Image (cartoon, rainbow, N blue to C red; front, top):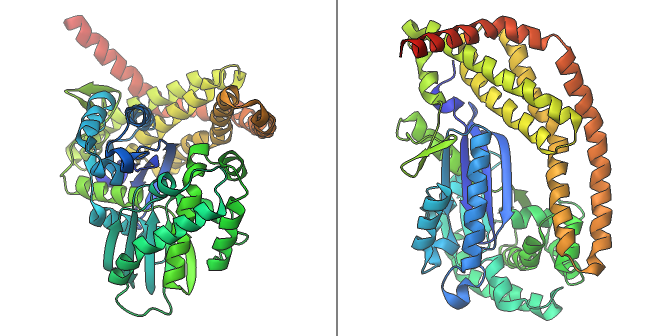
Length: 500
């Protein structure tokens, strides 16, 4: 039987100096996270912070707009809670508190500012859910405004430190040209080495000939796309990447590894930090790990829900500045444990599932028609809400017939992913083309053409799947299994309205 904390979808948001990222998922029985949605936006919140001491109005505007969109997206996929943390840029800025208040007032997202120790702990916990932390490891989380260093042995943290050195800060200080010059890159790496010397000495308190370095965050992920073999990264390979970056503009780098141009602009400085770390540590192996902060944050929030410490829910509306769910899935889930309420729970969930299947059926024809790109998005949103309800209700129904219907609900979401992802990318590329200089447009046009071809192939598969779904026996079975409960609920509501 699923408990409330296992069933709850949580949106975890990391507000960094370069990017704002969100992971929506739920804790699983093996101590990891099942991810259902992910989003990232390069905002450069910390741009210019070292020279002014403040977050700029334009960067704060962009961050608030992004967080508002992320909140809406979390609601659409059925998240039961949003947790968000801000790191170096916000904690170092004189107007950081004002920014936090703006986000709360305008986007409805409460943010907790965390220090370097907390950031390191979250990173390590999240990384442990996806990576092997046995033996001696140094974890380096290279962000836009700071770098967190964590040493561990056999999955136990031995020491950690945070230094105000990141790819955004280093770019602001040393890199002017595009592409960066050899001199600029050398200055960046030397400055990184100087800043790292003391902190590395503090955390590397013992000799570690077998030590592995694990680079996490966007810097590590994007660097891995530039090396010949991500499983065999060493200092020579990293220096080869740095030399290559001296020949690439931010625009060409962005196109080559499919990242936003603003993020590509600061990537060379981030890899210079990695080079400085690897040169000084001389590890037996360099590995790339997924960013752990959001996974760690999500697991932490799941712990709080399990303990009954967190009660804030999110949904489609707001109350007193807090986002509140119109249907408290966690509360309903607890009913299944009360034997006297099992029948009422099944009735309630049967009616809800019938409603959410009906929302899927209504959205499918628009997606099949293909004239409105939001049609595919609407089916995905409807199917995610359906899945959330079916996840909660699973213990109340016989597995023999419920599991296949539950699996079909999940398949609907995944079947539309390839088309939706390309719709969003094409929209962004076309907007980028409109503002791009004329010499850059042919390259964007080629990328648009490639994505359009991929979308066409994905559309054929989507239309086949949805067509078969609509013509198959599932719809009739849904009516048979859940329709009566929905009609009984409608009849009760009608009678109550008549009495009033």
